[in-house]
Image (cartoon, rainbow, N blue to C red; front, side, top):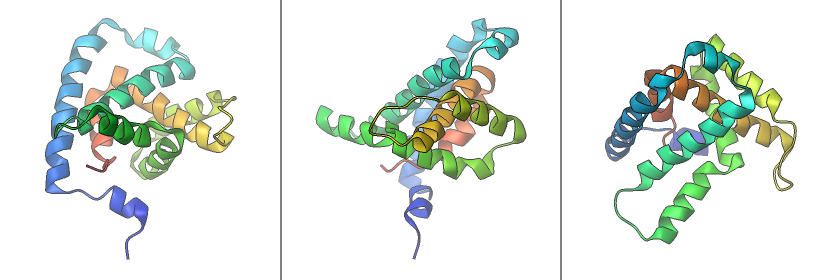
Length: 159
């Protein structure tokens, strides 16, 4: 019997179509917005700033993923909130660790260590893991769009 985590990240034909469309849109957005930021400026950004950006990029990706088929706004909201909450992001970060290279692991570590406070409802370790995911996404959004797309496709959001 497969664990919940194995099932969550298992590819399906329907998923691949939805995921591919969401990644194409994200790629187009990325190419237009990132061209004005120099590598030096990116290196000067704090992990918190990268997490701030990564949070927005991740939520946009999740919203695009769930956009089709058309649904009621309440359904969109429920699906998106389930994926962008700290507990789910922490779970996703743990699942991505085996796929990360040394520099990506370092960015994630910096993001984890930058998260020193948390909302009351979330354990500190969970919040730190979620922040490390957001930091990694923010960094890759600015530096390596193709790698970001590769990692986002490994998420296997539930259609």
